[in-house]
Length: 283
Image (cartoon, rainbow, N blue to C red; front, side):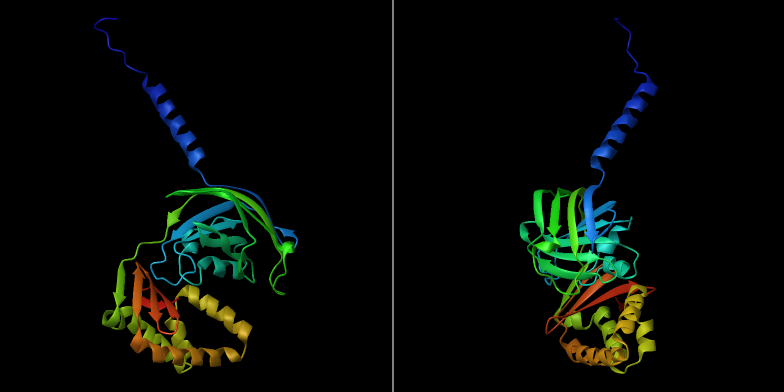
């Protein structure tokens, strides 16, 4: 009608808005389906996570490295943070997580670094993981992953695994590099200075001091390793501390990502540190 303005119903608009949000949430949610069994025992596949590591440090096998984690329980995304030893491995060794972790270059699907996450938490490189219908974008991936352990010879102690998984999930990023130090800047960095104190404690066999210089995560892992290695554990630690002492004056690079750091030493030696409770600690 002329001179009359139509005013839409406020309740109807709110309902339509909430409906759109609901649909978007469903369409954008992480999804995983399929089956996973280890040594003949089925493991529930309930959650999937993915993160892309840019490999700024230059020591990963893939550059970049896509990490896809399928688990039986919900975990924070930072279990995929790290360089060498991931928190997901630690959780699995304590029987607080079961599943499979796949690490590979999203542009090269022929080789996969696979970890069966359980108490043994063993890793191996394999070209036997079949990746199909793979779609990878800046923020999302989808595809299927298939593996049949009986199709080839395996290491004697490696768990027998079979899985057929279909995933659709958001891809998150490793925290950005906040400092990249080289040469004298690396040698004089607070991270290398902290590593020197850590190495000195190990070289002396002062395990109590080393514990105070370790992150909570490292403490748990070191305790587990000590139980496995028995009386030889302390001698191994002393030898490692002495070798690191010799390399520290020639530290090549320090890459910092917020509260995480990697110290790159000669002879392909890498040390991970975590800023915890006000200081850099072995991680």
